[in-house]
Amino acid sequence: MLSQTVGYAATALGCIATMGGKPTLVKEVAENCDIPPAYLSKIIHALARKGLVQTQRGVGGGVCLARPPQQISLYELCVSLDDPIIARRCLLGAADCSDDFGCPAHRFWGAHRDKLIEFLRQTTVADVAAFEIRRLWRRQHPRAENS
Image 1 (cartoon, helix red, strand yellow):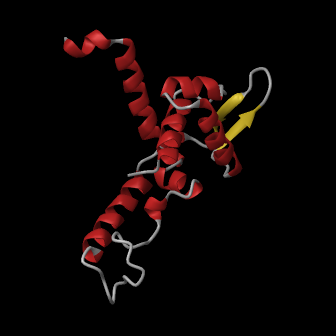
Image 2 (cartoon, helix red, strand yellow; image 1 turned 90 degrees about the horizontal axis):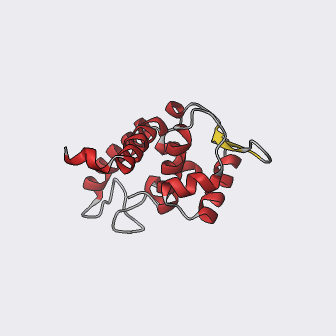
């Protein structure tokens, strides 16, 4: 599972991507995504330092993506926010686990970890934005689901 920080970042960037490049207030993104505003501000600040978002103060300011959403992968978010899920480490926590001397979970985790990393590399903020659009539509049209 992704860390809460990366999950919030992916959701927030997906929401920002739906704004079509228009700067959006962090407070509005936090509200739309049910993310604590202070926590999201810290995440946005970290992503700005990594060049994934641009921020602008003042009237008409806010946050927007630094690149098109199709060019920002979940893997890049994990790297930027130091998510432990991408670290090469033993699933059981064994310090001396390796290809030459593997723990009982070594083969299993190696194969699954590679699939996970590939998924994170292929899944982009654009994919999250498409989900966010569907999620917001469902919120605004709750009766349409039952029809």
